[in-house]
Length: 466
Image (cartoon, rainbow, N blue to C red; front, side):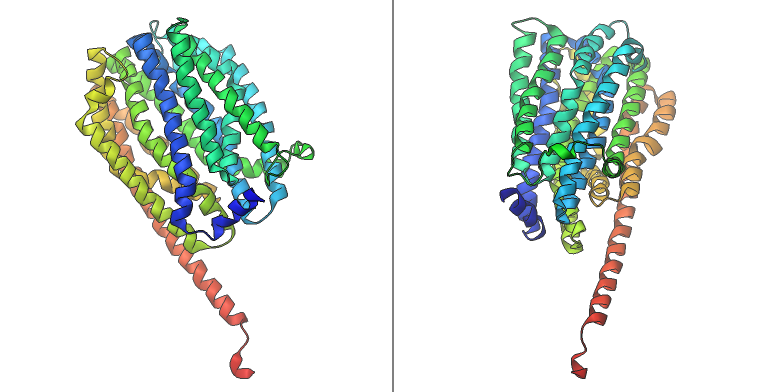
């Protein structure tokens, strides 16, 4: 079968070719995903106004929390699926797929109900003011109503990519982006629905690719597919999914806390426009970060499969090449952010004051971009080999251990500049920590390989005695 052949190539094809095959579609998909978010900001900034961008920025913690829950299931399920493919345990892969659907529906419903009940108080807590609340409320109300669609779409797309179909996963994401661009224009300009129209466009744009994903997993010739008997809660599989997915879940949850602290600090020391500026900087920097995340998504099935097959040389080669490509990508972002930030910011708004604040923030935030690729890839690498503890620790190191204390201290002494500088400082420290853990990993793998060689040698027949 075609998908079985594609999965088995993970253990034999050259790492360079595999990264190209798996990472390029993932990069295109992740870039499209970041453009998907950016399109909302651009249409809202020019079609609704500068204060609407600030209102949209207030919703970032919600989006991070939703992403956290989505990654808890999606990333965990995709890693479990890839590892089981490496072990040729296809039935368990199908069970993981079915339990992905069950978990996404359950979590999506609970999350939406709780958030809709307390939406206004939550938005105030996230940093909304009387001016920005109407925009944030209108946007999130619609997003939460369609939350189940978002969870299912993200979760199934992750599993599809890990089960040997990177191109189809890319197509699903591109469908979403293209549809969203058209619907954003339609709902904001001709129909005049404002920021609420952007939210409607987002949910509708995810519905079409979700149907596409459901059809793929329903095909009988697929190795990983829907089977009626598998739609029963399997607590062992759920435990495995959550264990692996806990790292990105905690990372995105920490991002939620971080954005709340940043929004409130910027509001306190710089006003609503500073919150909007952070929204712009976040969108731009995320383009390059998402490319790196695309690289790690391409790396994930390669590493997971070969780790399950105990081909450690291939695992390490995939890791090193991914880090190298990540450094190149983020260095490009650094050059753009430091040389032409004003040009980029004007894509989002014509408000000169908002542009001026955004330029300052971008130059500070992106100053450490050339080194953070190591930190991003390392966290995803440990997640890919099922080492949840190290993955969680690395994920939390930048966002919780370092950044939160800095956000609580520096702004008190340096005002709004202190808020901006917290981010690059935490990046540097977290990258050093990631380098230390990777060095230990390589040492441990070398020890394992030596033991396996000695065991193999000891079990070989002695030719001299024959």
